[in-house]
Length: 190
Image (cartoon, rainbow, N blue to C red; front, top):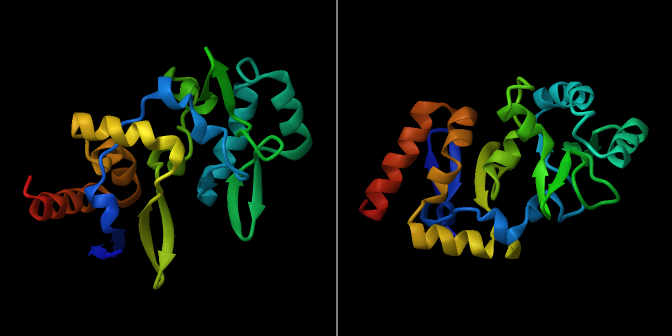
């Protein structure tokens, strides 16, 4: 495992070389359902998510609304804030359409009903932001559920950093993102 530094951000080299394109028809939205914890949140994301619950009343299943009323839509675990999950499975903001788990927040945002999109960590997935030496450290989590996304990314030659480019740019700014792309281009011969 090797790490490169792009500005003040450490980046795992596996992320730089990865190809990725999520085929929802294949994974069926597994990233919103699998795992014991929900999506990691930045503190600034908590209030908009709590405010979104009322606006999502017509979209979310009644069972999830009851769960949110009883437990809330976020939780703190070992000092990190997460979206809450129902019984350690799916995120409280999941809706199912044709057997696919989708994000109600993202859907409402795309329709112009919410001012804020789904959490940044969801838009960055499968990249996770960790800490190393006091700096953000971007790692590529290669989950089994994303096997088809890796294959499709390879077939279509879609770099992971391009697939999540908008989220990376939102997190670190356009200049940083362009620096990352320049590094990738120079190290991969693109």
